Length: 143
Image (cartoon, helix red, strand yellow):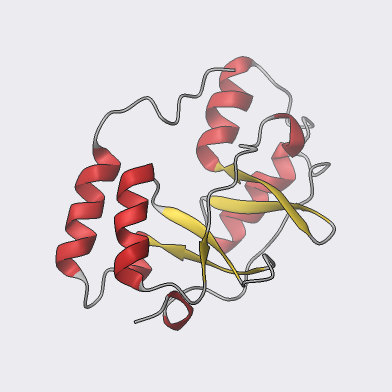
């Protein structure tokens, strides 16, 4: 199965000047823990609920702090035409639960989560989850 068959296509996007408060409100409204950050057509980062909590609130930043100041700038992604099994393996290796999905022109076309990929791929999903949960320091929240 291809990622395009199970990803979420309607993706809310924020720009780097969006405030943390507005970003958190959007996340609450759509029940999401991750939002892509774009500067026009280009995907420039990812903001997660954890980024808001650890790089924002925990450091005493104001609700008016810009997303661009706390987002993760390293954008990890997969392609819509990739096989689900390969993406699950990659998610385990890079220890993430969600990935933006790009087309081959590198335009955002969706988001995929571990739970989207799991149906029918239970063994791979279980292995990916074990890898994701493994302590590694890859995603240190140090500023």
